[in-house]
Amino acid sequence: MNHTIDAQDKKLGRVASEAATLLMGKRTTSFVRNKVSGVKVTIVNTSKANIDIKKKNDKEYVTYTGFRGGIYSEKLSDLIARKGFSEVFERAVYRMLPSNSLRKEIMKNLTITE
Image 1 (cartoon, rainbow, N blue to C red):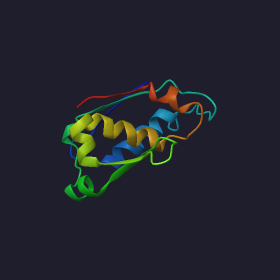
Image 2 (image 1 turned 90 degrees about the vertical axis):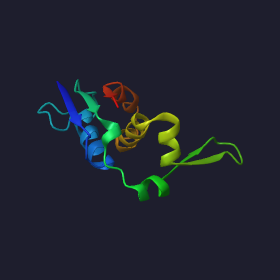
Image 3 (image 1 turned 60 degrees about the vertical axis):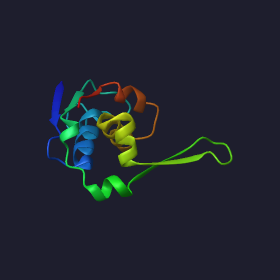
């Protein structure tokens, strides 16, 4: 099954949660928690999404390397400038999926276009 989500004039979290639900296969009748569903999701028009200026300036993505002093933070606006809107949506969907061994396999079924 293929689904297309149009992100134009929609909020980031709403689109990401809808995509995560579809990717997990929760809306299919054959939903099983321990299997990857065959659902493919495409998100289009990510650059036209409705992201507030306040969120662009306040939202921070924090990563940690595991070493002392290895904590890095980056604002949403800087991430958009560096990687584009598709990276923002990819991170949002990735973090909404359950953190188990299936997450990487599920993410292979997601395509994002600006």
